[in-house]
View 1 (cartoon, rainbow, N blue to C red):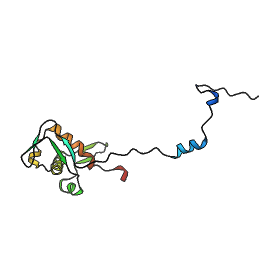
View 2: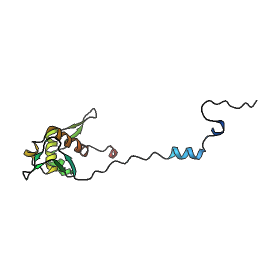
View 3: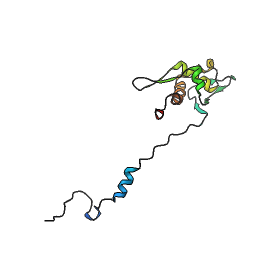
View 4: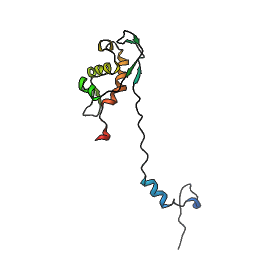
Length: 137
């Protein structure tokens, strides 16, 4: 009455042996390694691809160098980013302009001459530093 079990598939009977239980326990016990987030190197440099602007020395610049923001910057200019009830990131343009002007060392009246596409490149490059880290919750 001992009939050999019939198996379907592409595995030959001699190779059908299950892996050792120790190997299964090890693979289930150890979680996959978490991806490491890239660390930012300050200053962050953003190229102005569409139009150069004048800096505080009245020189035309084609890239802006941003220093690392601090809590004091948020205290002075306000937090330029927030997350709305739908989970979307909203940028407050006035606060972000003042923040970018301060972080780049470019005076605000001169910074306001920036091309809108370059402004968005700078704002989106910096926005992550003004959002909460869910790992801290």
